Image 1 (tube, rainbow, N blue to C red):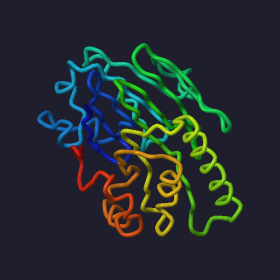
Image 2: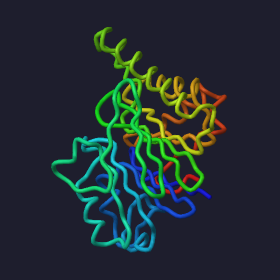
Image 3: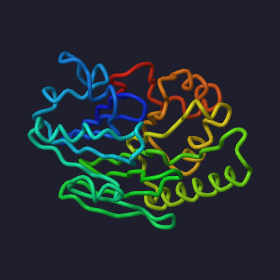
Length: 244
């Protein structure tokens, strides 16, 4: 069992058999009207108050993290937080995680195995094994190839991202992901699919959810045109709300 909602930008909700997983909640995702919920791209405490909620934060950038998430402690019956280790002197969590450039991080909760990968920006990407599912959320782990940037920067990004995809491939050891949330940032223009292409060369995923969209859903048209072999596995994000 798996239900998936694209909430906004890189914010994603996943309902498994026993849990509700929430990733990189920020901004309007946390400030909907009382009648709005996941179907409208919002986390409404009244809607999820009886769920077993796990909240994951990839890093501290404002488009991925909002301290308002901690207000859910008082409004949801069972909620736990998994945060990157950079937060450990400021916030409380059930688990703090990190990852090195050369080795994934391995962590255990009683009901979830958490593996982390080093971002090519800051923070971590998550691979979760929970309720019989394998779920990947990249955060800002992406092939950031910027037009006009120095060649040395873009080459470093290429090498670091490819290495992390090799580590992810090794960690999966031939197993398929049930869901992969992968950045496809339209600001990268012609180079926005580099990360997704490299990911697909290393990893199989039943469902791929493009994230880091900045509200620009036209990037999905580019995926369909450039990567038609992946298109049947790409969840068709056209607005905030349920996609699977």
